[in-house]
Length: 449
Image (spheres, one colour):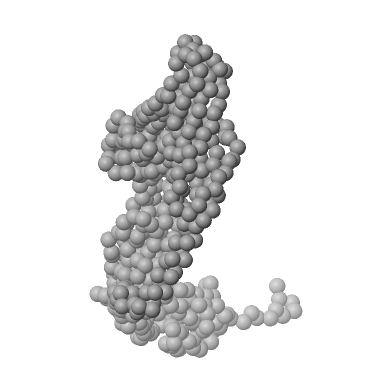
């Protein structure tokens, strides 16, 4: 900006001459200045006698910048009518021309008249007020009525909707555009303009979204200044919407095989009724997507954590346009997988010759590298002897487990063997004749009784 200003100040004479020529051209093309004087009023006729002839005269001054300027004008009447447009011509320079209009009134009248110049530039004079009476009074020029301004304000508060409506009334003696503003607690909160013919109400709503008290004034700022009385108000806002709260809990610390899935839990609560709750999980400090659910009383939500190695994870819950819960931490310690081994397998065979059944019984030592629950199924001759379960704890990682079961299909009258297996361990039971063979029956001879 400084460079531009300097360039203007250092203009060459030629440039200055060009500027002067341009200025002269602008001046020659400018419209003439025009002034319309306030009309003077004169009367002809006897006192109290009608008709009365009233003459209005006014001076039109024109400053013409070129020769032969045509001036057009007309008279404006208090009843809203206008005279015909008349013209006259003036030469270059300042010229003053008096124009007149006469009107005959046959009865009482009270009004005004003004002069309006239409060209070469529009201008309107002030109004000349007059009064004519046909009942013994002398016609006279009267002063314009002083305009009456009055303004008042009141306030109406609707607590249920948490708002206040300010109601103001503007009163004037004649139609007029009125510029006004509302002032609340010393601050201008609204400006506007209205056309007031006699009296008109204006309004302003206060929506504070929270309880508020104070005062308000309605001010007229134009064309004249006035202001209402100061009105006080008090707005009490009660929030009927349910209050929403949240809490979050971490799973218990875990030590064991990995990967493992752990669940964080959160509780969403509303103070009353059924409310829509929008929330999101904060996972290890990173906000997730917003989620929405409907809650009546309280509701538990979950967020899974799949741990593939030892470590910790944090969670918190943030409520939409609300607070964030405290952060909780979950911990996982990944241990080596627990292995199980079987040893010291023994077994024996017992027969019941009366029922011709065989019972295989035995035991096996089960050992684990860590606390665990072991399930296994002993078999004899490939047939199940029933599933067994053993609980191994940190203080007792080895236990001897007994088992037994019946086996069918064994010839009790012959020696043999049977294989007993437990999870890859095998034990062969050798046995002799378990039951004697039945004695053969003698054949009957002819003649035997």
